Image (cartoon, rainbow, N blue to C red; front, side, top):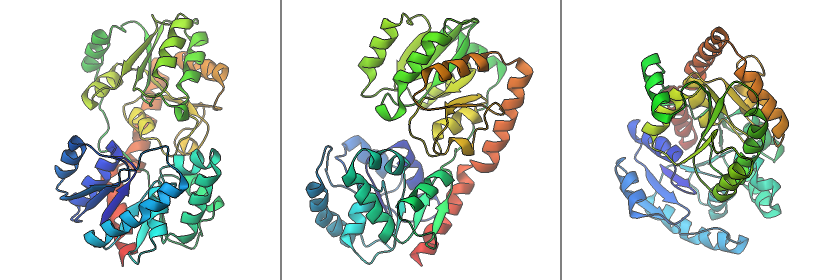
Length: 369
């Protein structure tokens, strides 16, 4: 099979690893320019055929269309039996425009139906075209599937809705939690963790605005923000401007091992994102026993029931987000444990990546014929 994606991410790695572990010979085509390190990472998965189309944003519609011929040549040389292509706004569009006879599945990444089409008429047009011509669709939540139907996908066509899920949940034990909190210097405080990128789509500045009010309400709290992105400088300036340096840590990008250490130290997970499908960051937090505070959009309501196993607030509403942070902090220990156990069960049932990957491969083979 051929995996055609925009960039090489942790998500792509898990998909390709799942294909290989289940016996699928796999080739990878990346829309943007790759590095030797990325190629090495892909080859370590047992993938010998890796190519990039070297198309960097911002790109015009004409540039995207010109890439079609290059993709068509690569597909012909790799001769796959089936193609998985996404996001819909670029990779799936290129596959659709190539008009080859190879069966294929359009893979939505959520932002390609909830975010990008609302900011570009051209992007919306590309998504609508993809959804009209693709042979099958893979979505990570019902909200994405419904949005695709609104944009033109025919409900009679093959559709798989499966969360991308977790390879394993992070087990939190008391000694490890104590050590992690001590190492991070947050003993005696309620710790909230944010693991999204510092990008406009995740609106981290709204979280800083919310934290300004929440941090002033006892008990003592600390916000750990893992990640980086376009808004890094604005984030640092906002923390300084609001006098939050003592209660906010901008930790930057961290390894998976360090993220696990931070999850052990945290009490709650918080996200102010303006776009979500089934957020793997949310699933990781729930699996780690952290009650979540998230925005009420996309796939989040499929995982979080307000004031039952977490909290939901409107996007772009710092005051309501701050109020939810304060409310969460008032939970007693017994209630927190109850939420943690509820979420752990939910993750075990619905977000087991081994099981979900089996379903995905079965779907791919059905489309292949």
